[in-house]
Image 1 (spheres, helix red, strand yellow):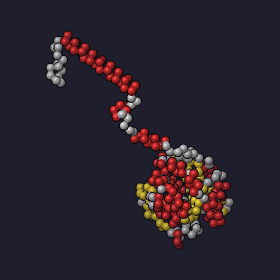
Image 2 (cartoon, one colour):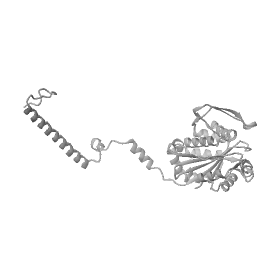
Image 3 (tube, helix red, strand yellow):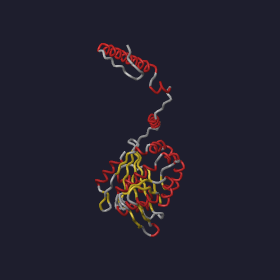
Image 4 (cartoon, helix red, strand yellow):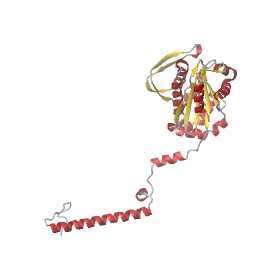
Length: 308
């Protein structure tokens, strides 16, 4: 009995008996194929751990597995570190902006809180305190005022800030509105020409925007957002590779109590933040003041963000 008349053509019998025989033969062939497949898979699973090992003798690699392995090699970090960062004019007669920044290594996060430049501590302005003892005096006074430890202080003059940040690169900034401004006095004038929408901004534009939000608009939410955006983008893998030379420039450009020993002991944390900069969570703590004095509700809220 023929099953096929020609290659590729199925022969359909006119006899019901022949059709039944053909069906039995087809079912038998199908059962043999199924049994063979099951036996083959069982034998394959006993000898090879994966299809990749069978077909390519283990030469097939997975990009996602490589990425996971890379992240697994990053050091484990923990703890929280608080920084006080401020910028003055080049003559140190005015504070342009001042803010708190925390690196939360337990949760891989940044927390920022812009402070009013004209705020008072025990009837003393921040500028009065700075004039008497610099950034270290502000660090001590604000630590006592808020009730949490500020580990390090960093003070920049405007020109030094611009020089240092220009080495780090530009920031992609999305402005909610067009900003056209010119202000300041004598040798401390500044201007802004920011378009609405997304654009790259350089160090000069970053510092002028921070000053504008702090002094002109007193928009501390916008200031926080710019601080967080700047830190997140500029602490990246490329800058980590240049971190030793950048740290030397940082020491020359600022007045700070961060030492070479601090830098060496913090390199693991810096590596993690720079490698995973796009995965970092950010928090903005809003500071509210009345008559240049921070409200008690705001003090409690800020303490909740920055306490360790």
